[in-house]
Length: 487
Image 1 (cartoon, rainbow, N blue to C red):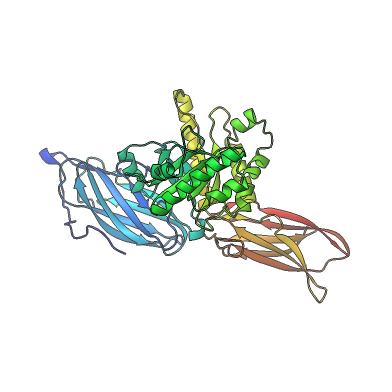
Image 2 (tube, helix red, strand yellow):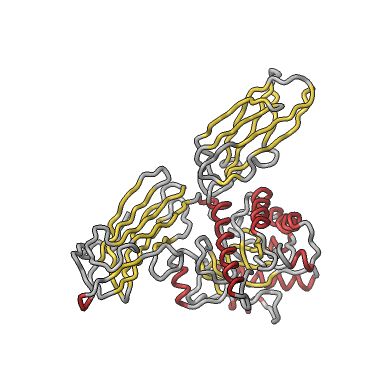
């Protein structure tokens, strides 16, 4: 672990601003404030070296290094303390340290400015900030792209659209990818492979490109146009390996389209419009089946996880201000997690914008923050569930029966304790208090088997598995039932 700037003089005794007025330091945990506490990466994985930055605002003429203390608290409650020197420059003071994320889990980072009260300040109540630092396993690193600027969100990992150079610096030093918006294959223009290649190279200050409006209803001409675009894009990606390529897929996704995305981009975001366009203009009444239809081709060609050349698919949700409903959206996210547990994140677009009243904007911001919390709760946190079909009966060679259930963790990190109970016809067969359910990249790595002997009588039976309290975890489906007939 390396601490930067410790060679500077950090012992400060009773500093005051020029003219004899008391100086003042301040820091905040707001995600994109000028003076704040933040990390890079935003959501690290095990093994990452994480840069923790402490940036204070400084009122008054302070010209020497300022003491700060960073406390890193592990999931088990143990803490380590680090001294960091903040170097003043133009109304701010910045310092950083590097820490290696050895183990997944929810850490807490606390920064305190001038911890020994060596500086005479006008306000001593704004000197500390605290943030959560989640560390996930490598196979569960999520993507949360937003398609318009939201400088108050905590977990957005990608910004796709226009922005200033100053905004780009804010995002990149926090481990967030600002992507430059590009025309897509469905927009006007003559598309040839060489033009597409050149158009998607050269990223100035951005971290890559977000290509808008791809996809089509099948015709030979449309397919060739799409294939041409993908060939040019694949060349650009090959020649710019450091850049991130995101595709916005409008309309339905067909297997032949999904196959052409492989190797041409990092992430495909499927358009959904579950709150407005699909029900209003497509006549969609079963939103859940509608989403499943969009996702099936991604599973057909194995793009729900970054297999092959690293391309993966996620879907999106719209936040149409007039029809948005928090409970319905959470139910949609729960459905997606249940049906497509491999999917690593989701995209977000829409919401209150131009022309919105002050009240609509306030409600839109509150709704955005709610969606941001869903990103955290259903993808970063441990997510415990009993997936469909994961309760069964084993018939052994000696004629004995066993009831078995697998409890899965489809979230980003290991869970804490959870109680599991098995029942047959309402009678408790077994209760187990598990210390944890591991996070894992697949069903072979992220589940625990619970088994109980069962002496049944002939006839029909109802079997039940139920999860009990699981502090610190999101519980998706806590109960599953199945019927079994003993001959």
